[in-house]
Amino acid sequence: MVANLNAFSAALLKLDGPDQLYSQACRRLAAMFHALAAVVRLSVGSQGMTQSPEIVACHFGTAEDRTALQAKSVIHLSRRVLEAASSTDTPVKATNASSGPGNMLLTVSDTHRPHVVFAVRISGTDETTDILYLDVEQSYSPSGMFDFIEAIARQINFAQKNLLLAEVPGVENRVGLARIGDDGPAIDTTLVDREGSVYTDDGTVLDAGAEGQI
Image 1: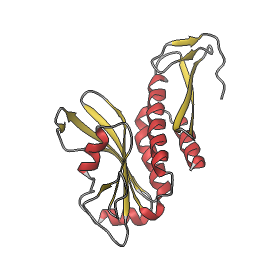
Image 2: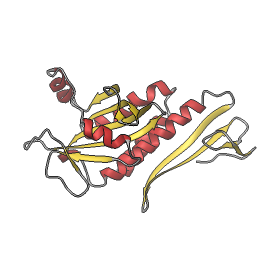
Image 3: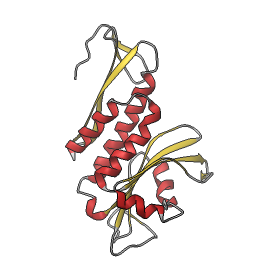
Image 4: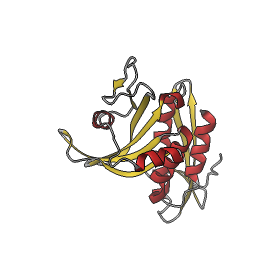
């Protein structure tokens, strides 16, 4: 899982702009787990979701998955899972197999191919929230998946900030290293401009003239 996380993080660092982020993240996750991976944008208010979810990126893991989807007119996403994910900063897990402690139970059952769904908030504004939604067969969901998805969501969020800040004149790059440790997933980041000044996420200069190192 750590190797997959590092490869995912390295791929995001190579993107040219924020408009590529969600699509590339979904494509890589879908291929990694033979899964449906999507980023869903929710319009939120005091009473929860106010409009139908908008799928802003979506990929499927295999050609067989894509062929199966083309025979359907609708992609099924769990509204209950999306609503739950929009109200917390930690991932939400749901399954159509026997529900374990803390798991939600999907209403669509499949005894032959049980699925697990993970959803986690990755970014948002006062009016919208973007949710990473991963629907994977249980046989492709390894142990440690919950922490992995949480680390993936944080890496997408940091990559988004990096790509947006890179469009600011004078800001050149950020180094982001994702890891899963004893205390759960974490992201170490450094933002460095052409003169070697080190920045925080909000653009504050921490150390003018310092050298950023990986």
